Image 1 (tube, rainbow, N blue to C red):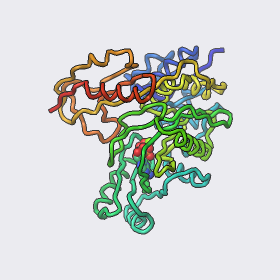
Image 2: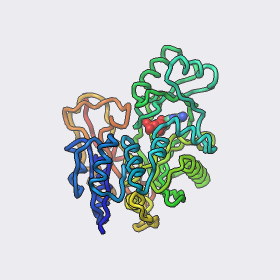
Image 3: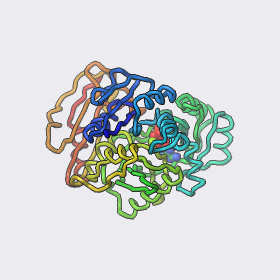
Image 4: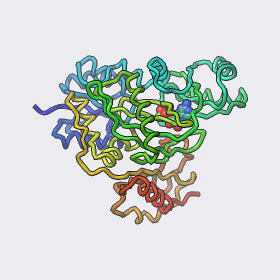
Length: 398
Ligand SMILES: Nc1ncnc2c1ncn2[C@@H]1O[C@H](COP(=O)(O)OP(=O)(O)O)[C@@H](O)[C@H]1O
Ligand SMILES: [Mg+2]
């Protein structure tokens, strides 16, 4: 019998999953609220529906008689996916687990309870209470961030000598970006950042790879690129893996992909957050398969269908790097020299803006203007080449 998979969301990040699942011989039902979502055309059946509505998507799941549901590279419908899994007794995470894996406060509580390394953190709705705690209980730099959001929206680093007015202003920004109107105040971890791609199957937490991340500086920490495997020393990589594994166990999720984010300060890892899903920014869907040879998409799809995933390499591992185009803000006048992207080491590239568009200041990952993915013998070579290409394509703005 052909398996039937519901994919929640059909945007650019979900396209590789929809295509791969279809290639695997699965009947793919893709749902998105936007009738023009670019992934819908690759599905066996496209459904335009509100993917954040549990009731609506449950109806779809029942009507389509699905064998599994997946919500790759996004968080907006994690609870919906959990609810469908609960009601239809499918493989993958429950609604309880989905809530824990998308609410940064509950996540921190789970890490603390389990002893997974996590920065000191508290959650507030009231700015005065938060200010009081900041003055009394925290030392050094801190970070304010929405309890429920993603893509670095509403995040601000604050120094220990910040004035109350400025604290209140940043708190309100963060609160407005938070789906539950709660704001996290956290000890700021200073150091390089990593992500960890994981497949949890049958209670086993399998780390596929560790990614080095390049982000903008404070205040927004927008991701400018990623490379795999990590160029860090093996000992550091092992510590990062152990922190991520502890974090996944703390969340208690099973039969799913996970994307963990970790920072290392003075040699010690601290978990930033863990999503019980494939990571965005092409990390899980494109970079991990290229750098490990493991078909992570097929693995995640199989987990969702309750089929044991294959975690062995099926292609030759390579060094891989993605870098994002972030031109100077202003009106885009011209884009030139894209010929340099025509090279066998370029796996793919895309520019999201057209001449005449306004190039925004890069305050979140939605503000980036394009990307290029490079494969090379080693990650260092891939980084060097990707950065060269980023500097050689010319965006003229005014
Ligand atoms: N406690 C912290 N210390 C240092 N940096 C942090 C901290 N929390 C968040 N950040 C920075 O902000 C980025 C985004 O925060 P994160 O919790 O991952 O939210 P999002 O869901 O928006 O990705 C992180 O990747 C990291 O660079
Ligand atoms: Mg994050």
